[in-house]
Structure formats: structure tokens, C-alpha cells
Amino acid sequence: MEMNLPNCITLTRLIMVIVFTVVLAVDSTTSPAAAESAPFTGWFISLSLPASVALWAFVIGAISDFFDGHLARKYGLVTNLGKLLDPLADKILVCAAFVYLSSVGMCPFWVTILILFREFLVMGLRQLSALKGVVIAADLSGKWKTGLQLGFCIACLFHLAYGGNAPQPLRLLSVGEGGVWCRAFFLWGSVLLTMWSGLHYLARSRQLLRS
Picture 1 (spheres, rainbow, N blue to C red):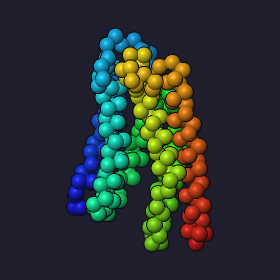
Picture 2: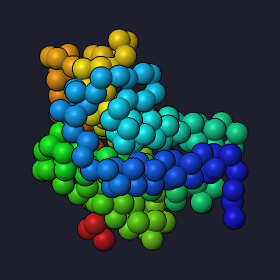
Picture 3: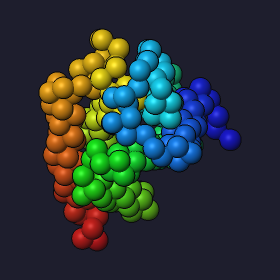
Picture 4: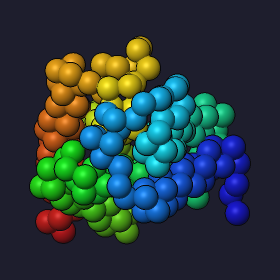
């Protein structure tokens, strides 16, 4: 088993996905209206407890996405296990959040379907290329796409957890026109880059598909 620090961080992200989904499955009553009516919130917890736990589990998972890859490349700790788990953990984390946000009405279902389709498409193309001995590396548009998707999910989870009671420095993510515009920027930016990066992967794989 190729276990090292980056792979341990990746496994932590998978654990955060489990926490995220289990907490929201146990209590599915979280809604923007419930968060708005919560009389007390602090930096790490609100009376919308499931959304608070889900929010911070997601934030920890998103932060770990940067550290595991950075450490693996910097210290030469890239392993086959890491190559498998890292993109898998990313996709599970983002897709779980989008499915949940669609279920509570904060994200159009067609956007979630588009994101799921793109992720499965790229996964299939990479698997085909691996069988041919060709490596399709992640490109810049894919990295920006992931960043915008994570930003949208975090902004929505802040809104669900805190509503109008968000801590002052983070209130832009939650309330009023600022919160609406912030979420809209992340959402439509991620939609555009999801389509662009998916088409880009298809273009880079055209020789593979022809063969």
C-alpha cells in the first residue's frame, strides 16, 4: 500500500465527503429560511447544525485538495494510489455537494447533470487513454473550473448554515444582493468552464477516439 502524507490527506478528503453526506442525510430539513431564522451563530457553528457541520467538512475537503497534490509534487511523493484517489475524491466531493444543492433548490438540476456528465466523460477519456499508454494531464481550464465549483458550493453552504447571521467578514457570501451576485458569479463561471474544459478534453482526445 503506497501510503504517505499526501495520500493520507486525500483519504481525509474522502472521510469529509462521508461526513458531509451522512450529516445532511440524517437531517434533511436544512433550508435558507431555517438559517435566516436562527437566533445565534458563531464562527464555526449555527443553530442550523447539519448545514454547519456539512459546510466545515466541505471546506476542509476543499483545502486538502490543494495540499495533497502540492506536497506530492514538491517532495516526489506521487504514487499510483494517489493518482487514483486524488481525482476520485475531488469528483465525489463536488458531485455530492451539487446533488444536495439541487435537492434544496439552490442549483438548477440541469447544471448538476451537466457537471456529472462532464466528470464521467473525462474519467472515461482518461481511462481509454491509459489503455493506449497516453496520459491526458489536467489543464488550466479544468483547475479553474474546479475552483469556481468549490467557490459556489462553499457560498451556498454558508448561506444554508448562517443565512443573515453570518459572521461579518463572511456576510458577502450569504446575504442580500452581494450574496446573490457572489453565488451567481461562481455558478455561471463554473458552468462555462465545465463546458469549455469538457470540449477541450474531447478535442485533445480526438485521435484516440478515431482509433
